Image (cartoon, rainbow, N blue to C red; front, top):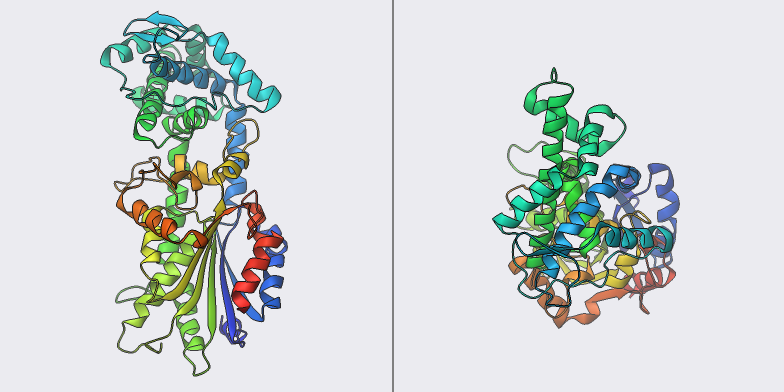
Length: 460
């Protein structure tokens, strides 16, 4: 670490916090272009990695789940429930069977046609569906009807049998484990079958209710992606991923923290030595970059750096500021980014954000033919948690989906960031454009237009 800090012996320095979905073997290659661009700007650079291999692991396991036959059966039932609720207010032109509770559910065959079009042609099912104005909650009568109907559904009952007999399907393994926990492992056949079937029915209705609530709250990602997200949540797979994600966030948040009773770690040592390196008469021009989940580390570094300024024994000159903070598709919430923006003029001078347009974000599929959204959509819809620690859909600051007129989700901090974006449009770049040509999250590390923009910024 001492040698690394000693190498920052030029006027310009770049700290690049990189969140990478690659296995560690591919990291150096992926970041080589950025290192070269920083060098051409006359800068020495340090790269700090966050979450190596996480995206790869997520993609591999999500791909497996979405290919399970049971997933398609559950997905179809959730879509049927939500479509029935959406059609409830569509007037006399709505097609489908009018069922108890005035819920006009379409036929399973019609839903199957939409899903088949995705498989054969890559078309997102129900991509043009918009929530009807005044969409209401599922009524108790509608919920009871759905439970009765699904309990008599032969395919659903066959899934209950799969929960007893199959060890291969992740969804069924999770259901069987939950059923056995409720009644005990010695009841291996009929009892487990009935309990597993009941669990499946409740999970389908609960997932459908959650999708409807996200439509009502304006936090949905489209019908099909939201249905996928809520199914994963109901089958506890989302909670496992959310636990890993929360652990990563906690590690990042505490990486540079200091104070009484807090043991010194690598991050704290790095920050101490870095402050010594920049607290010299020859002022250094420092650029801090945070890419993807690396923005979590970037935010924590800035918080730690700013906190040191107020210490009585701080080496930092009172007027010293980091020059630029650059967020590349930041995988952080609006409160987390708002906290960083409030440090402008105390910890740093200028801020810029580069992220994908919503069109490009939707086209950057995490799992082709399965989950037609990006990694950021998945983190927002599946892995984030609400202030009470519960898994919930949470807007991310690096997604264009949550900006623009009419957007209100995310609370006061989201509005705080949106006000800055509206007031400083040049500071929020939506790619592809002239300053950044990236069309996927991986391309932010290698895009020539973006690297040229960063090179000019660092050298200027």
